[in-house]
Image (cartoon, each protein chain N blue to C red):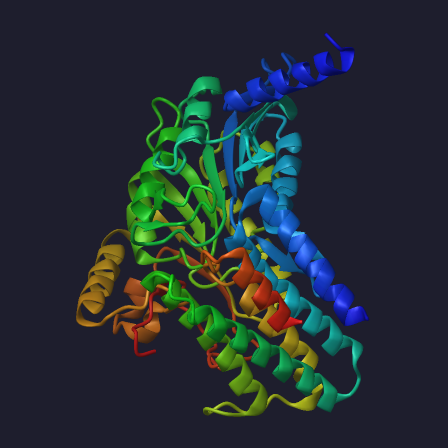
Length: 358
Length: 147
């Protein structure tokens, strides 16, 4: 056979085989695997959608890549812990024929990368995080100590309250909702561990009574934005504080406050829209959360809510005592420089959907 | 000449990117963002408030015309029309504030650059993106409307 044809045939076979497998091991190293696992962090970075934003100088940034840089920096500094990073990216194919594994999983142990896997989904009707959950199940190990802190961080657009399709641009038949999110991240809890020490949502409009209520059984502390959050996302350098007291249960609480404060300080300098970031101590909310949730449900039944619009402050809609609104919530807020809410000087820290008339 | 080049390069870029991923939805959202980024940079490059205001008004009008053109498409679902309506409301509100309409105080001349940043950040941090399935032909029409 002609040598050129030989090469072409070989290339075609490689492409075909590469396209057949929905996972490829790109890197594996045994070093670092025996190092400490005093804590665990799991990053899920959603990039299968439009995440373009521009800096004040006009430089285009892909928010998911920017979040990846932050996650990788945290992972390299986590010398006492293990870190899993999932970067969900748009489905692509070569010449429209051979699907490519564009999404990535990184596993770091003791600050060193021990595994990198490229992957893709094949089924448009699977669970929202099905591939990531399977990868995690295949490659994660049990924690030596069930008391070790476990933190889950999600970077993406607003997680819809009601089931909606179209969140993954490439798999737009997959439904996503607050309830689906809660059920799926539960699969990332190690055996014997019932709750995450901290769940951080770097998304718009998920600091809501509904999200807090859903997460309460599986998380102790939640960071989320009740209203819009700029695509430059939360600052997570404070996760490095886990190195000072890796096994401390209370470290997650102070880390959550530091993440919220760092993010607020940067965003309030850079952004002219409203900045709202809240830390919710979910155990402290108890009956107050139930009152708040009941009130939002009654309000939702009486009024037609506009689920497509930006959240508003729950305190502006619901007539509740300050106690029910503020206990267990540490809120950072700066009003927008323009717009109809620029003179609003306080925020309850809770976001609610507006009515259709607003 | 520059205008023709822009049209040709935008069309070529669009066709090329559609061949790779067929993600017209993403391109629609990004098309608006790229257009408005250009507007904001032009506003910042100008030191004439009248020109800055004009640039913003022209850009808002172009985006509103583009939205109207998409809305004429018969294939849109109810959900897609809702997304479009929300996006249009957002642009309408910015235009009203810029010009002191609908209960807003007019944006002062020395605040136009800040207002352009604010408008861009509002558009780019929208809680949901425009996930509307458009034909490539319609997307090209939209890009031409925004030029």
